[in-house]
Structures are given as structure tokens and as C-alpha cells.
Length: 74
Image 1 (cartoon, rainbow, N blue to C red):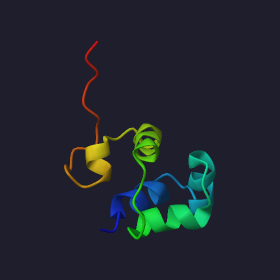
Image 2: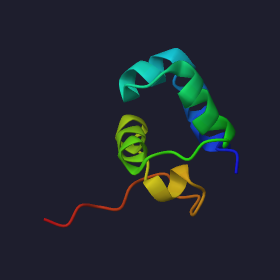
Image 3: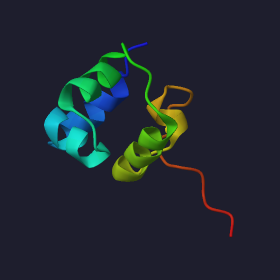
Image 4: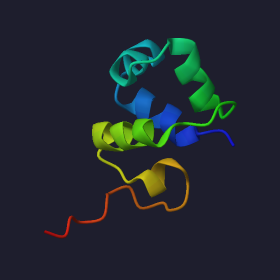
């Protein structure tokens, strides 16, 4: 599965793959593979990306088209 949303969010925020890789603490090539869907993204990276872009993990992985995360309950 290709993660079009990861690529689109990164581009929409004027970020490079190298910048995202630094943010996640991985190599650019590893991040590129996450974006292209040839490598599975660790859950902790999905959490960091959802916080960075202020979207839900469900949105990142294509489960929903609703960008905003669910409201926090207490």
C-alpha cells in the first residue's frame, strides 16, 4: 500500500523526505520506503507523524477521510 497521504502532507507542509527522516530519527531512504509503501511504518513513527501534521493515524493509513484526530477525553 502506497501512503499517498504521507507524501501529500509532507509536500503540503513544504518538508523534504530528509527533514522528516531527521524528525523521526531514521535514514531518508527508510522514510522514502515508508512513503512508497515498501516498508511497514512502526507505530511510534505513525504517532509522531500524526502529531506533526495534526491528523489522526486513521487518516494517515487511509481508514478515514477525516483529518482531525478524535477529541481527547480527559
